[in-house]
Length: 403
Ligand SMILES: Cc1ncc(COP(=O)(O)O)c(C=O)c1O
Ligand code: FES
Image 1 (tube, protein in one colour):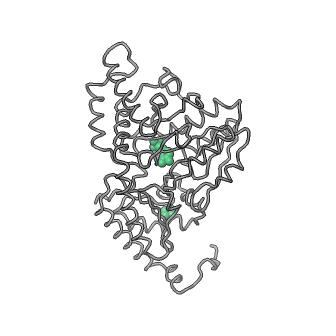
Image 2 (tube, protein in one colour):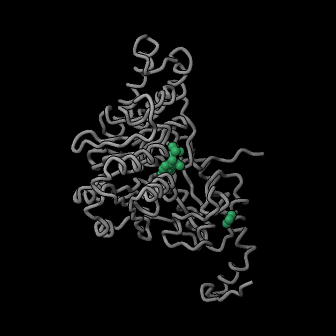
Image 3 (cartoon, helix red, strand yellow):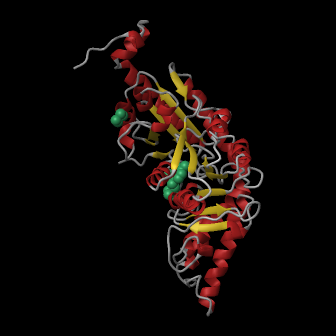
């Protein structure tokens, strides 16, 4: 089997060799438990963790005391949402989020509902952006938390985080953001953006899998979350469990590298992404999903109308990409994100997410353009719907027979 070209960097990224190099000693010689206070093995591990805490904090403009290490963003999202609900439920029981959030947020919110909370799932506009007036209208005196993602994992749309946090604060609520796809790709600053809690994950920015962090604000206001993992009282009592020292060191190194390289990398990737997008939207009846101005630099999600989804994925086997179709998702549903923008099931099926990354080359992008163009053109040549469309028949007005 040919190894396909990897253009699925929103799902995960390959680890940077420099990150691996930083981690290795913490598996072998520096193997201590960071909580062992009475011998140098523990101190050395703790030093590694402390340094990583600074590196992560620096990337998001936080102080190191505000970083809680976790097993990844799914845990961070759960800790933030359930933890805030439990901590502040005397104050109010209402949480606001959006329909395009990651399942880690949506399902944590469903859990809160089972615990007696009330959650409002706001719609988004056709371009994927949240309407600020709609948010403001949903705020109530009982609202304790607004949770809106920074950049969307499927379409890359960047929400107006500063404006959203200002509205949350105006009504006395905390603001949390799942910034998994944004951190390390675009400048994120918890103070500039008014963020009280933020989830991030190492494997989305060239670090190891299974490690992440939750930023929890300490000043103005001091935010608290109820621990979801009880035990030895690690991480200021908010997340017990022996720290994954090599993973945390890797997370720190990955954060540092992104801080150094993000600006030039964002320019390089957005130029490559635009090249890909421009070449593919030359094809008739192809549409870019989501707002193209407020978008992560490395993502393009494109729908090809009158192309059958399964066929498209089959014909693109040389590219590792994601699609909006049911067969590439664990839930067996077409993308709820694309559907919430108003796309039909059919169009969601024939949508492809291209996610470029640090190791993507121009040659790979050129190849991806060729493969996709050929696949779309060939499938359309075989498609009776395409033929009808070309003959000028209005397909939306046809009433298809039910079987
Ligand atoms: C927006 C978003 N939130 C949360 C997650 C979950 O992160 P993790 O894989 O670290 O649990 C992902 C990754 O799929 C994501 O894209
Ligand atoms: S493309 Fe596989 S279910 Fe639609």
